[in-house]
Image 1: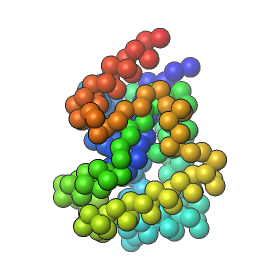
Image 2: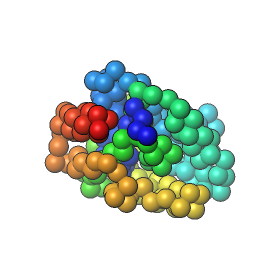
Image 3: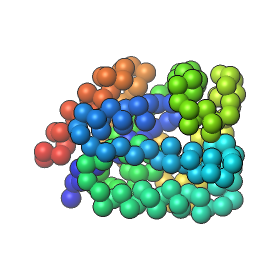
Image 4: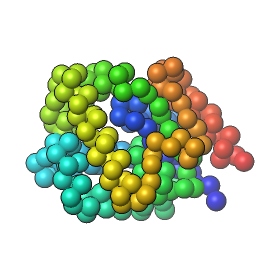
Length: 188
């Protein structure tokens, strides 16, 4: 049974949060960012997001806390969730994957750092080279943890209802495409 939930996954810097916020706004849905939730957990512990990822490799309770929140959202309706695992926890959702080459992602993340206070506090890096290094470390940590904990590979695009290259489409095009395809999906 389909749910009125859109889950947006993708690589670092692919535009998950920006896209999810705008899709939610257009549809009149709520928005939840597991990345922001994870960052806040880190800040509460006095850790950068990279430090929290490393700690989570040894302490699975950190991921379980985030994932429990996502699993509980399965009972929700009319919500757009940006998360690397929500598609797994909410299989009845409209599952979107945003794809972007890492070289372009690092520039986007640096630009976002200038505007996003939570990211500034939680990332604790400011040069493109530091960003790229931390991105790779974070991505590798997450992939390892998700596979070890749940046997999932969130980069396998065959698991998604819609895959969009965010390098070839700007934000407004990505948002319009998701809204259009979601409306078709939910109607069938």
